Image 1 (cartoon, rainbow, N blue to C red):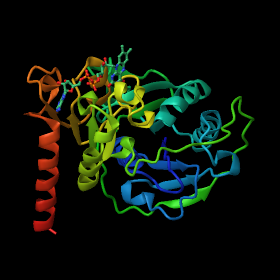
Image 2: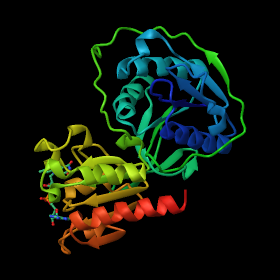
Image 3: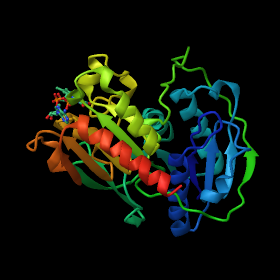
Image 4: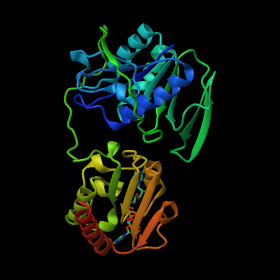
Length: 320
Ligand SMILES: Cc1cc2nc3c(=O)[nH]c(=O)nc-3n(C[C@H](O)[C@H](O)[C@H](O)COP(=O)(O)OP(=O)(O)OC[C@H]3O[C@@H](n4cnc5c(N)ncnc54)[C@H](O)[C@@H]3O)c2cc1C
C-alpha cells in the first residue's frame, strides 16, 4: 500500500521541509517495497518532486484550496488516501500541518504521531521515535491502527536526491464547506522565514532597544539568515511578533542558531533546542544559555557582533 505525503507549497514553491518529507517517505517506501505519492494542493508543474523521491504526484488543486484551510485540506487528503489505498500518510511539522493532521487522523480513523525524528525502528507494526516534552525526551510509539500518520520534525532526515520521474495525475475531490473561512492573510515580511531558515540570528533584551537591531539585521544578511527574538522583545514592540521564538512562539529547527543577549530561559530553550548548533553571545558567564550552547562567547554584543560582521565580510570577500 502506497505512502501518501502531504507536499505543502507556498505559491507553487515546494520548500526544503517538503523535499525532506518526500525523501523520508521514499526511504520508508523502499523498506516497505511500495511507492510514494506526493499529494499537492497547488500547481506542481514547475517542481520535479521525483528528484526527492516521489514516484507519483497527485494534484488535488482547486480554488477552495488556494489559501490553506485545515479542514478542507484534511478532507482532500482523506479522499486522496482512500482513493490511493494509502496506509501511511506523512506530513511535516509546519504550523499548518500540525493543525491539519489531527483532523485528518479523525477522518481516517488513523493513529497520528507528531515530531518524528528518525526512520521507523520497525515496520510491522510501525514503530517510531519522536520528541516529547518540548524535545526534552524521546518516546518510541507503535502504531496499532490500520492507517498511520507520521509528522516529521524539520531537519530530522535531510533532503536526498533521486532520479525518479514522477508523473502528475489530477484527482478531483469534492469538498464539503468548512466551519472556518480564511478571510485574509498577512504574511511576515522577513527576508528569510524562520521556519525554513538554515541559520537564525536571534536577539534578546540584552540589545537594550529596537534602535540597536541594525547590527542584528546586518549579521543576518551577511549569513543569509532569518532574524528572530525572545518573547519580551516582541512584547515590548521592539520586533514583530512573527519573530518571537520559544515555547509560546515559533519553533526553530535550524542548523545554526545564534543567540545574542538572550538569557536562555527554559521557555525560550523549549522552542529552539531542535537546532543543531547553538552559539551564544552574552556578557554574563552565568547565563543559563551557555549550558545549552555548543559554542559560547562571553562578551558585549555591541563589540562582538560588529567584529563578527566584519570578519564574515572579509571571509566572504576572500572566498568570492
Ligand atoms: C508562560 C511563559 C511562556 C514564555 N514563553 C516564552 C517564549 O516563547 N520565548 C521566550 O523567549 N521567552 C518566553 N517566556 C519568557 C522567558 O521566561 C524569559 O523571560 C525571556 O526569554 C527572557 O528574554 P531575554 O533573554 O531576551 O531577556 P533577559 O532575561 O532580560 O536576558 C537578557 C540577557 O542579555 C544579556 N545581556 C545584557 N546586555 C548584554 C550585552 N550588551 N551583550 C550581550 N548580552 C547582554 C544578559 O546577561 C541576559 O542574559 C515565557 C515566560 C512564561 C512565563
